[in-house]
Image 1 (cartoon, chains in turn cyan, blue, purple):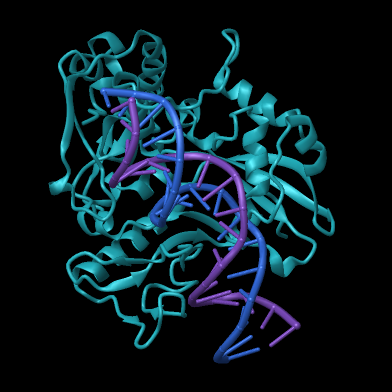
Image 2 (cartoon, rainbow, N blue to C red):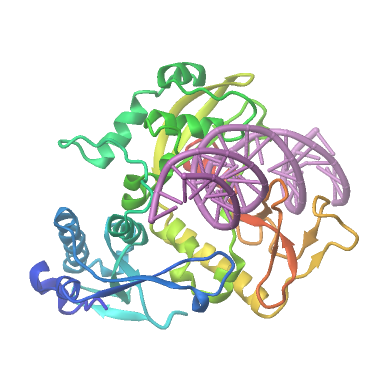
Length: 366
DNA sequence: GTAGTCACATGTATGTTAGG
DNA sequence: CCTAACATACATGTGACTAC
């Protein structure tokens, strides 16, 4: 736990963070989708060692946390303000974990120090030498953020055709993720998804595209990876994939303008960190789905329907948890999964963020 | 063990349509 | 005729299998 009353007096060297880092055993499990955690296999145990290269950042993260305490702003600490070492919420939840802080009368949420998911994933990869992840080339004298901005700035104002030429990006056809793939091409990732490069994962960054189309009706909500109902059933929100998506990720929203029919121009990008209200809303949705699955409340209407017919169900609808919506998302033959416990068949789903919300973020909505 | 191949799931998205 | 709520497109990722 973060001790608001004491920690601000303690330098990093003698902090609980640094002490525990000297004496910590990591146990890695293999995550399997739609499988309860208790059945995960242990694949690696190893003592934790903070890498020399990362120490400076962890120290800065620690100092940013204790500085907030010193400024009487402990209630404003969140997990987004740090890079590797976060300040995750901890406590009984449901409003019962507000504690005193020394330099303000405002009560702060109880929190603990934590290494972020992306950081630990990168750590794991570094010790396991898995198949090689693509790397971004980050020159010695530049930071990740500089490289990110320079790579994008270079193409601002250019059309997708121009960018295709300059990046030697081939692939034509009807892929629905062409504009996103083009962003990856800007980072010279050899065709890999830029969001899955070592650097993006470790720093907790994710690029998404927002397209402003001539036919307004064709503007789309923003999609996310598929929902793992077994994870929701078993895990608390704070340990979930969704928490990682929204509490520990900085989004870079790349905006494309359709200036002529089917012609797009990369107009700008903005950074977005989901705020607390957003996080609370997704937590509500998470817990609602958890409740539904646990109590066998999910109903699916698929009588006499094939896998490629329309199925309907009683999961929350658009508007119930604005700006989120649950949508089907499979393709090919891979469109059906089983819910935990009930073994109820249901179409694969993902969460989507409402386009009005997203367009508001990037200044397209008035 | 591990390189190559195949099949298909996943992640990035957008397309389609029925009912108010 | 709009748009919520269903659907699918395609490139990449990846597990299973084979051959060495």
